[in-house]
Length: 263
Length: 319
Image (cartoon, rainbow over all chains, first blue to last red; front, side):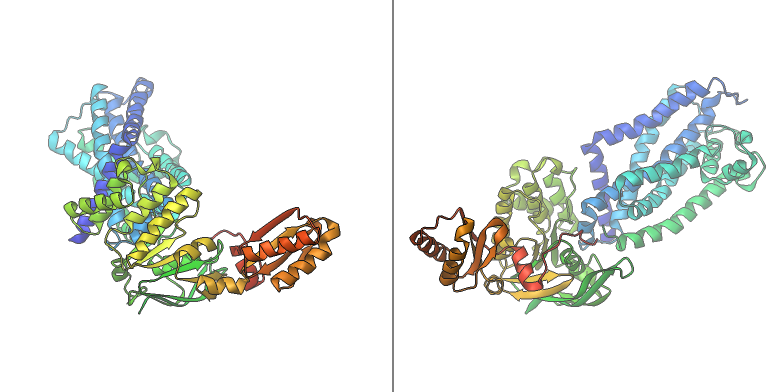
């Protein structure tokens, strides 16, 4: 019970930071919105998707997934910053639940995602995105996105505690997330990639998430499936498996790392 | 009763390559202040981190408030406060926000946490800047707030790790005042510092540490005596060195030494200013006009020199 209270206080701290530094919220929303506009208008005209509604229908799930994937870097650099400044030492010297700080941070960072996703969805709607699957499926889609961000923020905790310099952490975060989001079906069909990359793209959790969201938002999943592999046939199931695996591995790893953390 | 006991603590880093603590033992009597004095890298921070449950020693035993630090860290955390160069507050939040948050984390409840925050802000003269983010604070204000955060539940034992390192002289004086008030209230305090002056001012007893070991221990008077108190230094014309040396030896009752390069004659003196006046009188009578005269108080370097035979070296604190 007291652990829950601790978690709530830390989560509140994360959210309060957003009100104190509105730039964080502004920039974490501007960037994805910029991506929406750029991809929609730069590539949108030249990619023939063969689907009604055009490229933007396929693009939006891709950008949603990419954006929540960046939670990894955000969590990691925030935590590294706290570690460097000695804040982690203070928290660890308090008589509170030892996992409260990391759990609170993952929750706070994931709540930021909710705001960002809403703003992006509005931007998408403004440039022609029209999910056609009904409200329940759309909400399930967003739940998937939220959970994916949450799972990755646990990887972020581990990275943040392992690499202590916040700037390096930021770079490591991007080096992990950029290839993962582009070596996928998020922005272009995987059929054009070299054979080896196609396999990677098919099994990439980003692809299964994107394909899963496309299904949930009412699209046919033809953009991703290239070889009829298991993940491209069962994207939602695979996404759940991936998220479960990530959390199963990284929650205990990160909590243990935190308990032994030193700056 | 001893409030803090460290016995035979050993801590190595990088697979034994760096030995931060080498069988370090110390203790603090309840209600007193122990100053742990040593240069960078001596093992001060490592000691504090072990006692404050942040780090596990490779071997040895540590008790705080009668509780085993290694076996029951959660219980120790309920009775300690930690502040200093490595424990910190949230820079983005305001001073008030920080104290309320920490109060809530101590499970005071929102109302009590607010009350306590206001009380501490008042006590540390931070009420005016309570609603400003910490990043706008001066170094001294930041340290005071940091200290306030460690006092939220009136800890039985307080650890202050280099509380004034990096502060300007004014900030340091302010901090000393705050710590002195605290000590009057009977808090058991373990304080680490690089400054002999600071240990002198605040501590009942001083433990000098070097290379992860306690190399001397006692009140500041005892330690200073060990170092040899003050030194009288006189710079004269080259022609007068010999005569000056004789006078200084006579007045101080100690053998005086000469640094020919800078034409300085010096000797340890036990009577301070009196010895200075007497020496000047004798020099004047002998027709010698000193170019420079100084009474040098023992510094940490002198303590080290006399205790270890080597100068306190600057090296990066093992982290």
